[in-house]
Image (cartoon, rainbow, N blue to C red; front, side, top):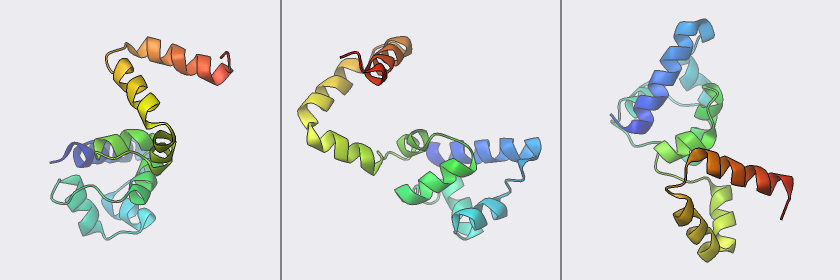
Length: 117
C-alpha cells in the first residue's frame, strides 16, 4: 500500500467513523471516479491520481492539498511556477531549511507574511 493511499484511506475511514458519512462509494461519487478505482488507489494497486483529483480528495477529507500532493510524490502546479521564476534561490532556500526545526520555519513564514523585509 502506498503512503498516499494508506493515508487517504485512514483519514477517510476515521472521518466516516465520526459520522461524516465518507464511505468509499460516497467519496468516489463526490470526486467523480469509479469506486473500484478509488479502492485501488487506497490499496496502492494504482499510483496516486492527477493533481486535480488529489486536490478534490484533500477537500473531501479536510486536508491540506500540499500534504496529499507530497504523499503522492508531487508538487502543486502553482509552486512549480513560483520555483521556475527563481529556481536557484528557491533551491538554496529549501536546502537550507531542510533540517531547520518547525518553529524556525513558522517564524520565517510569519516574517514574510508580515512583510517585514
